[in-house]
Image 1 (tube, protein in one colour):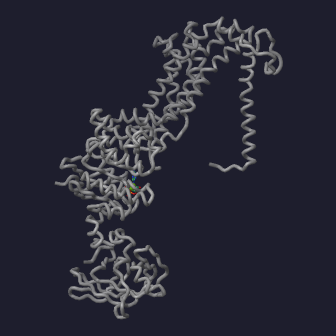
Image 2 (cartoon, each protein chain N blue to C red; image 1 turned 60 degrees about the horizontal axis):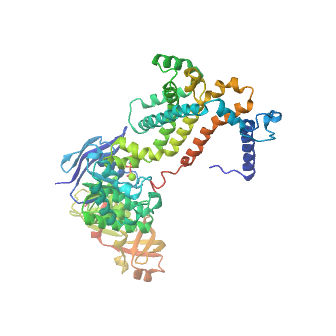
Image 3 (cartoon, helix red, strand yellow; image 1 turned 135 degrees about the vertical axis):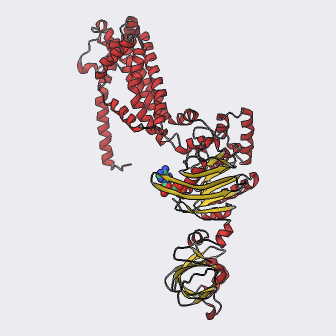
Length: 363
Length: 277
Ligand SMILES: Nc1ncnc2c1ncn2[C@@H]1O[C@H](COP(=O)(O)OP(=O)(O)O)[C@@H](O)[C@H]1O
Ligand SMILES: [Mg+2]
């Protein structure tokens, strides 16, 4: 049974609809990440689950019970905000014990819970400090601790790491993943950072303009995006999007004219006749490789600049035909190419995607 | 923040200095006359040129009038009205800031308009109400009107302060099952010290110094607040300006004490550490 499910959930602010017909099932213990560009409605959707925003239409179930209109206090959830929202006038200890004490948990039981959580998150030595005396990472841990103390059924996180510096973000990401493995609680996590989503999620929900674009495991989304938006959003550096023209159509394949005149034949189950259509070819930067012979080349890239990240080198430039592109190469490949201005490239057909003019994947 | 040139800043400094000087002259006269020995005649510059210093005038005042009784009257009336204004003002302001109430802004507008009424126009109606309720010549006859008159200002100040508090603090507590009343009491109120301090100081000052309503409401001398003392004893003190000014000095002391005591709470930044870093 799903721990949490949304059915046809919609949200309107006045006449503006920001969440459109979201259907979602989250299994028990699952770590689900909502990802999407800023303003796509991630926070709103999370706040609808928390009960901080009403659900305009549709339903919410938690553990099979309908909670669409239930008071936030009775949903057995805990939420960690981007801003941490620690009570500034209370010590760390008081922050952790505030909710249990206010909701009638006995003093000794609260004490025991707070001690256990403090140990788990290494807050023992900070218990008497005020939030203002903590570093960003420590504040973050207190906020997580405050959620843990309540032993909720579902954890909600709204961009909890985005106020931390890059290094700390990676560390806290790791700690969060570990914490989830330890306690195994159902978690919904919001971020605009696809790397965070890829590394933390059991399943990712990609949102755009208040609509679910695709739901799947990180690798499903990466290897098999349903549309151009998901293909472009997941993966870094970004997938190359190259305009191509359909040349001829066979029974089970499509022959494309690539920029620069090269040809590529895709086997597809899609049957529509697209001869003459302009469609988009998606190739991830790491799926390009330098052509070994001139006959082997499919496209050529005029290199504008290189970026070296140590383990990989990125070549940025313009393809014949005008599309910008980035190619990821190993450093040893770069060594042979450092003088090259124009790079002849090939890619494996099975690692490339086709999208129609609407951005929908052609399979 | 506007960047001022050094010249402009110096000009501003001198201007403020001159302004403060003008403001302080009456106060200085009051103090100098009060501390001049009773037998010396006040002469030039309203007594600012002091030849001798003594506290005999204060001795006269304490001997001739039950100052401490009047002080106690004032404190009871003022502190009760301060307490009421803070308590009810904060609750009303919080409701205005956070609850969804139909017609909220109409009510708020009405509240603001009451600030525009000149207080003297209210004296007669308030007197009649007090008379009807049998509150004439009692502390309550002043406490209730002072509270009512102080509330609009308090609500306006506190509402904007509550609205500026990070809503996530309250949302977190709400999700965690804390009742709205407790969120108000344990989170919103403690974080509002800077605004509450302004309200306390303002309400204390206004109630403590109020004169006209006190004059028409309280008849019995021993129940009169300190602000009426110069009037009650004007006959006795008229020939002794020193004693009169000593009385005035005594009246100003409590307000200054309250101001200084509360001032340290008036610092902002109480919410620092609540959100972001
Ligand atoms: N209280 C609100 N009233 C009106 N519009 C809102 C409100 N909250 C959010 N929105 C709008 O809803 C959209 C989604 O916002 P949000 O969920 O915060 O996006 P995200 O968290 O993905 O960045 C935005 O266009 C935003 O302007
Ligand atoms: Mg957001």
